[in-house]
Amino acid sequence: MQSLITLVLVLMPMFIGFAIPSNPTMTKLADKGLSYLVFIILGLIGIELSQVEGLGSQIGEIALYVTILSILTIGTGLFALMLFDRLRPWHAKKPSVKSKEHRVSIRGSLAQVFCVAIGMVIGYFLPADYMPPENTMTAMLMILILLVGIGLKGSGITLKEVLLNKRGVEMSVIFTLSVLVGGLIFALMFSDVSWTKGLALASGFGWYSLSAIIMTDAYGAVWGSVALFNDLVREFFALLFIPVFMRKYPSAAVGLGGATSLDFTLPIIQQSGGLKVVPLAISFGFIINIVSPVLMVLFSALG
Image (cartoon, rainbow, N blue to C red; front, side, top):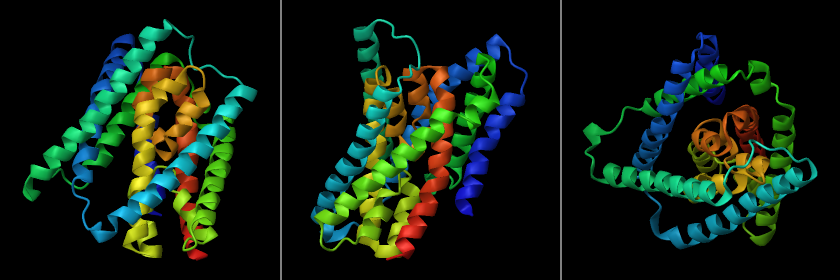
């Protein structure tokens, strides 16, 4: 129920953005505001990460699990969507000057990761009384989606293209099945991991705040930490490599973000792929955000 409420809170501003009469000035301001807002959000993520505690003496074991699981889940999803792009080509935008655009994209991604690191440093030294309010991230995400809605309205993209995107649905199916295969391979590699646990751990799809809670409740703090850091690795990998894959493999680039394609990585997707790719990312991210909690709860309930 909470995940559905979160989806409504995040997507509602997009509808409001579409309802606001568009003009070139407002569209330009929305696009500019989006660029600044991503750094604020990434800083807040860093502050939240600085508050994670209690990993204990099993940090080495957790690191091994996280490394293998992240390689498998990111790798299987990326390979499947790259193959999809090969068989069903689709271009987000016309390529411009290759080398210049590539360098700018990488530099921007590194700056975003650096922003997370700065947030972690701030969060470490910030007194508890000065921590951001509990709902700050939700408010920032709502503003982000509002600005995206205004930008989409100004670009002439229809709401139908956003929510009923055929390629987004196809991507979601391919991504989900391939990442679950990665979870099964992970289970085969470790005797203490059942196939249902492997599938449950793989089903976070980048939604670290939710996967950590569900996996901790189901399997204990160690596996909750594995789920948390596995999904964080996906998020950081996406921040770095979405611009790298976008020009030749747009579906794979969008899929790198998993569930975060709807929110955290959406500005990076827009910056590297243009407004045309945003409906695809929102359609894909919307579906993955619905599928993820259902699969995690289902598989963890099976053992």
